[in-house]
Image (tube, rainbow, N blue to C red; front, side, top):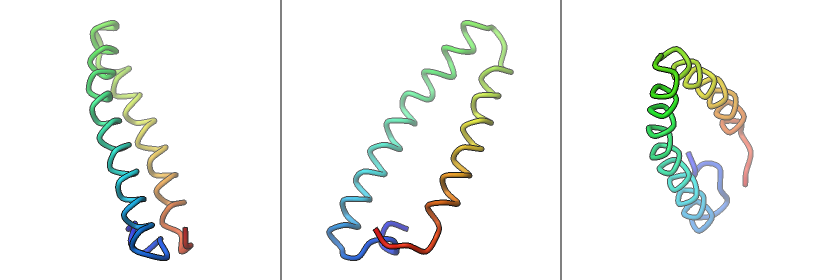
Length: 71
């Protein structure tokens, strides 16, 4: 997707590196945060609620990012 949104290959490479590093960072801390919430509350409902909120946020951001525009 980064290739379609950028004007040149250098911009696409920069966007790809940024998106991947942020994604891996969030994936790494997400497991810890969900486990911490579950340990503190001894209930999965709070963790599942957090994941549902994040999914809604990602849907909103993804729809905005998918619009036809150049970076």
